[in-house]
Image (cartoon, rainbow, N blue to C red; front, side):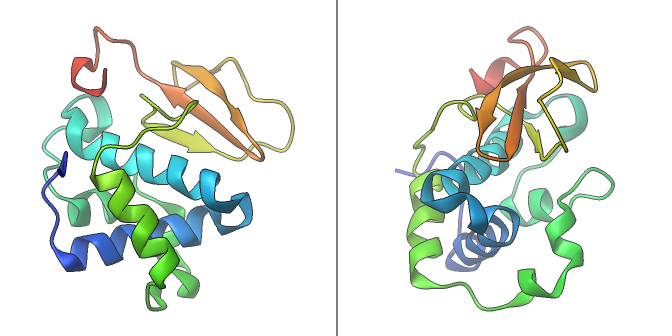
Length: 140
């Protein structure tokens, strides 16, 4: 059962996003990026107030995803990434992205905080950051 509303187009959009942002991180890395995206739709807090759809989340500006500015994002979604996106939409979560709303790829170690948000952990090249439960209770 979906934790956020999603049409076929939304699933494909999330699939394209997770591939473009984290294909080099493998299946688990792509699932974690999908976690962050779905969490942003659920959150309704901080930088993500009033996001209600996957499309709004993907194309949020400012604060959206860098991948939407690259041609690779606009290629057709592949079956594997569609399946992964559907898993995210169905509510599967993966540590350290379980409650994360942000991620980035630093040149070195993960800073303990990023824009005043605490590091939840690292997976391969990406560091994940989660809000407090007080600031964003809906992602917990």
